[in-house]
Length: 375
Image (cartoon, rainbow, N blue to C red):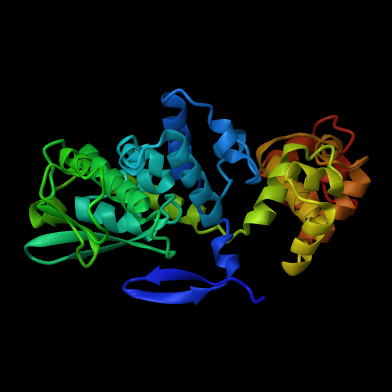
C-alpha cells in the first residue's frame, strides 16, 4: 500500500503533500497552551490529552519547543470530545492577548499603525503559532484579513478559522480600543450550531457559505496610529526580533520529541530503549522511523549536548569541567574533543566577550584549557 497523501491549501488551490509535512514540528505550541488552559478552567485535567503525542505539559513551557499539525489537531479533537463543545475555537481565540503571540506580538506593539502591525504579524505568523494561513490586503476604502487552511481538514477548519480570526480581533481591540468592530465577517463553511456566538463576539454581520474566510474592516482602522508606537524602539526591537526569529529552522515531530527527552536529562543521557518507551514506541519502530529520516540516535545526543554546552559557554562562567559534567561527559578533555568535532572550534572561542579573560585570571584549574592551549 502506498504512502497516504494529505493536502495543503494555498489560497484557493490544493496541492498533494507527503506525511512528512503533517508531522513537521515547526510551530510554537501557542494554540495548544490556550486549549490546555481552557480545559483546566473548565475543571478537567489537561495532562491526559497529551498521551501518546511525545510531549508533556511541562514541555509546552519550553521556549524552543515546537509542535506539528498532527499533534495540534489531535489535541483539539480530544478537547472537543472531552468538552462536547463545538465553540472552543472562539473560546480559545478570545482568551489570547498580544503576549500570546510571543516575539511577533511584541514587535507588533512597536509598529506605527494597525496596518503595519498586521503586516508585521503576518510576516511571522508561523512563529506566532498560527496553524491557519493568514493573508492581508487593503484598498482606499477597506482592509481585509483572510484565513485559509494549510491542510485540508474540513472537520477542524471552523476551529482554526475561529481561533485565528477571533484572536486577531481581540488583539486589534487591545491595540486600538474596544470600540473597534469589523464591517462584516464572511466564512466559507456552513452555518454551525453555535453561530450565535459569532455575532456576540464580532458585533457585526456574519455570513456563512462564502467564498473565503475573512474579516472586512473600514480603512480608518488600518491607518490609525497605535498608542504603543515608538519610533526608536520599533527599529531596534524589531531588528533584535528579526535576528532571533531568523535563526529558527524546520523541525520534525519525532526528532523534536526525542530531543525533548534528551534535553530533560542531558547530564545522564537515557538509553535508546528508555527513549523509545517514554515515547510509546517499540525499539524496532523507533529505529525504523529514524532510519527513514536519515538521522541517527547518536547525532541527536550530540545535538542536544552541543546546544546545551553552547548555552552554558555563552551565558555562564562555569569552568569547563563543570560544563563537561552537566552535558554528560566524564571529564573536560573528552568534552573539549567532542566540542571541537561538533563546531570546529575549542570551547573558549565560544565564550562571551570578557568571560574567558576573567576565567584566565582566576584560580580556575581549567584556565589553560579555556585559553585554548589544549584541544
